[in-house]
Image (cartoon, rainbow, N blue to C red; front, side, top):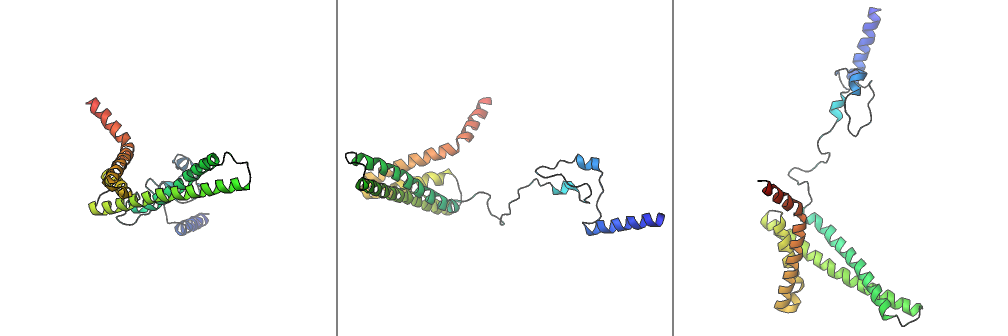
Length: 210
């Protein structure tokens, strides 16, 4: 009996070593009290400490020195594409409105439908081109300013927005440049204020306490 029990114990130890090494043994009661966040309950017959399977850190693998947030160059593609899609949608709706308004004296027929469709296509392409150009200029200025300053903050946003407005309206002379710069400054400043609104509100509340 002793030899058989020792032999079975040695066999279990050998299997335990093959399945993950000789580790601490836990009873069913101890395993039941271990919190396993986001995991299904483990079998009490596994010779593994469940505490080693709980991950409290991020599961994303980033290159050495890389930031956890995307920079302006990565966001440029999304900004340009989103602006083109938004412009096409708004332009198509505006073209539909204009087409219906201009052909209101015509009966619903094929010529009227073709004219409305042409107006929708023309306005959609025009708006997509305009907003896409603005997004391209803004993204290019943002990337260049970020690389030149070596920092990413709201100053880059405001500067890129102002320069974009100035260049976009440069065909209108000095007045157009000034008007476009003011519009870009106002829009970019409002965007920066919106992004930092929670921080500003929290700072004002903390200052009132003191």
